[in-house]
Length: 149
Image 1 (cartoon, helix red, strand yellow):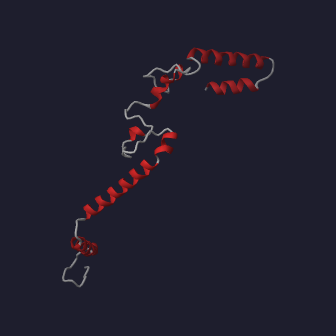
Image 2 (cartoon, helix red, strand yellow):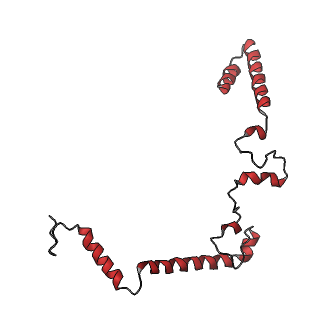
Image 3 (cartoon, one colour):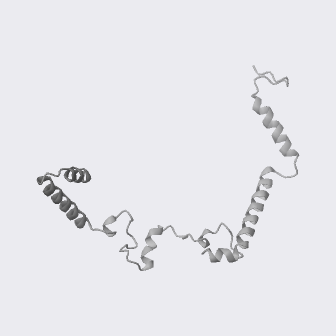
């Protein structure tokens, strides 16, 4: 039995603490969530001040923040607002990347060697290693076979 000398038996100890805390909160002028909201708003205002202070520097660094933009509007901070993956915009550069808008990056047949070229290269390597093995050099053959596994 927890006997807390307050006439209540078996009351968990934390209940006493909670009662004390809620009592304190009730004695304050405004509810706790209003205080929290004020603090959060103050922080957001501070972030907005910092962001607007970056004006010239930010634009030089490629962040088109304007004086009245809110920090939580991330579409202004170099991030695409659309859910489209970033790699899909590579083709906009017009560079030597044969990526189409809907290709996935892990489709390596579009980047570098085609599958046929890779297989031909492996067969050439194997033929070369077999030729060397016939001449008495087995190191390259073992390594090439390991690479093929």
